[in-house]
Length: 211
Ligand SMILES: NC(=O)c1ccc[n+]([C@@H]2O[C@H](COP(=O)([O-])OP(=O)(O)OC[C@H]3O[C@@H](n4cnc5c(N)ncnc54)[C@H](OP(=O)(O)O)[C@@H]3O)[C@@H](O)[C@H]2O)c1
Image (tube, rainbow, N blue to C red; front, side):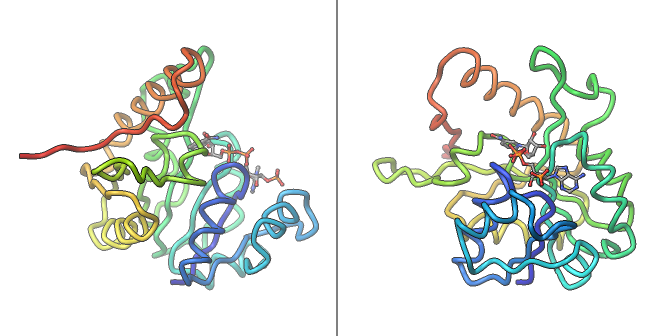
């Protein structure tokens, strides 16, 4: 698939790199192709392409948004036209003071992202763990794969993102419409509070058992 990344720091860079290694055509959307984050991502994986944001998004089938939540509006505003009809994977998390929900639970971050890019198909994914698990999600001693939950309105978009999640080695778990994003964002806060504040291992992940 043709995939563009808006934001390639802790979260975006490992996902972009791994997707490129899986055979996807991955482009970093870069207003400044010489920026430190572009150079760092290219050092990690020289197979990544770089293009101006509008060009990168126009050419992509799937666009990952992995900026700080506060930067999402400016980042999306620059490519609103080009995002029409595209799958937009929202990797952002709105985090407020004291590891609270950044929008005070009035709305999920993903629903706000959808309102900023109304003609895209937002799927919230890759948000429920820290970046350590996006770099390496192999748990070879376990009999189940770590789960990656995702949600969105559009079934075709969710199908495509679910396939990317599976290719990356997660068990994809579609949890419903975009109204579920608020609950995923609270799962993130739960994980972040446990790991970053209480000292649990960052390699603590969730798994699904069924019978
Ligand atoms: N860190 C985690 O463990 C984790 C896990 C899951 C989800 N998340 C969420 O994922 C998002 C990214 O987190 P991160 O840790 O990867 O952040 P990060 O390392 O700071 O990277 C942010 C990226 O966004 C870019 N950026 C900033 N402002 C931008 C703008 N206005 N337009 C375009 N690009 C912009 C930055 O580019 P420059 O460096 O050039 O400014 C950088 O490439 C956040 O919303 C976070 O809540 C984080």
